[in-house]
Amino acid sequence: MKRTRPLYSGKAKSVFLTDDPKRLVMEFRDDTSAFDGEKIEKLDRKGTVNNRFNAFILDKLESAGVATHFERLLSNAESLVKRLEMIPVECVIRNIATGSLCKRYGIDDGLELDPPTFEFFLKDDARHDPLINDYHIQSFGWASPTEVEAMKSTTFRVNDVLGRLFRSKGMILVDFKVEFGRFGDQLLLGDEFTPDGCRLWDVETRKKLDKDRFRHGLGGVVEAYEEVASRLGVDLETPIGS
Ligand code: ADP
Ligand code: UDP
Image (cartoon, rainbow, N blue to C red; front, side, top):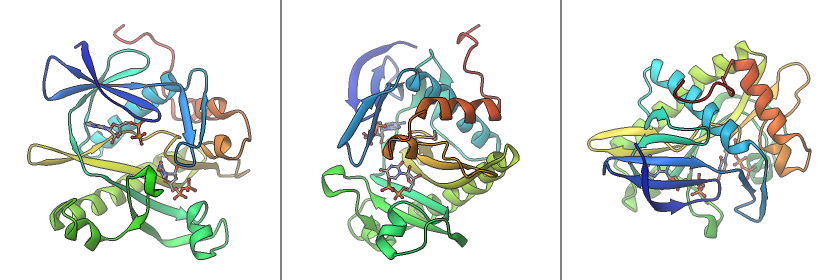
C-alpha cells in the first residue's frame, strides 16, 4: 500500500492518505518536541526506533485483546493503520507521581500511586492541553458516555498488560498517554505507544529511559529508547518485508 497525499503533519509524525479511504500511512519522523512544541530537535534514528517499537507494543496489545489501529509495518519509519476519527483527548494513567502531576498538586516526585490515577487532557497545544473531566467530554460532545467508559477501561487494561511486560524486563511503567478514535462503530486505540509518550524507569537504578531525557537535556535519548527495545526483544534491524 503506497501513500498518495499528505493529510496531516504533527510534531513527530506525518499522516498520509492511501488508495484505500479507510487506511492511512503513518510516518514517524526524527523530530522530537517537548513543552507543547517549544523545544524541538531532530534525533537520528528516532523515527525508525519508534515506528518498530510501536509495532511491537501494539501487536502485544492486540494479542491481549486491546483493539488498535495498527495493521503492518511498511518500511523502517512507516506503518499502515486504519483511518480513525480521532477523539481529541489524551488518556493518561500514572503509577508513580512525577511530571505535571507533582507541579499541579504538590505531590512528592516518586510517590507510588495506589490505585493508579487516570486523567483526561484536551488535545490542544495552544491551550497547553488542559486537564478535563468526563463531564467536559460529554457536555462538549467530544465523546459519548459509553466511549468515555471504554477509553478508561481500555487504558487500565493497557496499564496492566504493559506494566507487566516492562516489569518482566526490569523497567517500571511510571505513566503513559494513549489516544483513541472511531472506526465505524468500533473504538480503537490509535496514535502510538513509544518512549515518547510514556515514562519508563530502570527498576534498580531508576535511570530514565524515556522522553524525560530529552525534556531535561540528559542526553542519550535514542540510545535509551534502543535499550528499552533491546530489553523487550524488539527487532530494529531485519529489513521490513524480508
Ligand atoms: P501531534 O498532533 O500531537 O503533534 P503527532 O506528530 O504524533 O502528534 O501526529 C500524529 C497525528 O495523527 C495526531 O494528531 C494523532 O491524533 C493523529 N492520528 C494518530 N493515529 C491516527 C489514525 N489512525 N487516524 C487518524 N489520525 C490519527
Ligand atoms: N504525555 C504525552 N503527550 C502529552 C502530554 C503527556 O505523551 O501531550 C505523556 C508523558 O510522556 C507522560 C504522561 O503522558 O508519560 C504524563 O505526562 P505529564 O502530564 O506529567 O506531562 P509533562 O507536562 O510532565 O510532560
